[in-house]
Structures are given as structure tokens and as C-alpha cells.
Image 1 (cartoon, rainbow, N blue to C red):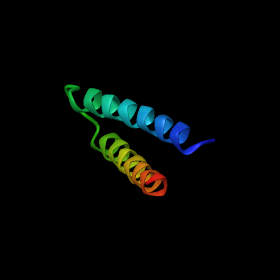
Image 2 (spheres, rainbow, N blue to C red; image 1 turned 45 degrees about the vertical axis):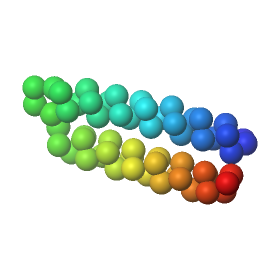
Image 3 (cartoon, one colour; image 1 turned 90 degrees about the horizontal axis):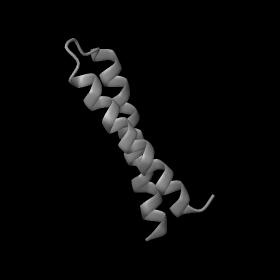
Amino acid sequence: MSYSTRLDALKQRHASLETRIHDEDTRPRPDPMALTRLKLEKLHLKEEMEKLLALVD
């Protein structure tokens, strides 16, 4: 898998997590554990994207 393909896949997952975080956060009684897990996963994706971008540049 090329760097750009991997980066695109990570960006899509990142956007999906953003949507899931928003949905969970706007529920009447959001689950704090689920929010924490989703935010951590999103952070890990961001870090991986930054590493890939550093390799490409």
C-alpha cells in the first residue's frame, strides 16, 4: 500500500471517528468511557498520519 493510499484511508477513518464522537457527545446521556475510547483512537490516527506525512516530505 502506498503512503498516499494509507494516508487517505486514515483520513477517512479519522473523519468517521469525528462523526461518531459528535453523535455520542450530543446524545442525552453520553457514555464518557466510549467518548474517551473514540478520542484516543482518533488521536492515534492523527499521530500515524503525521508520521506518514513526515516520511513523504
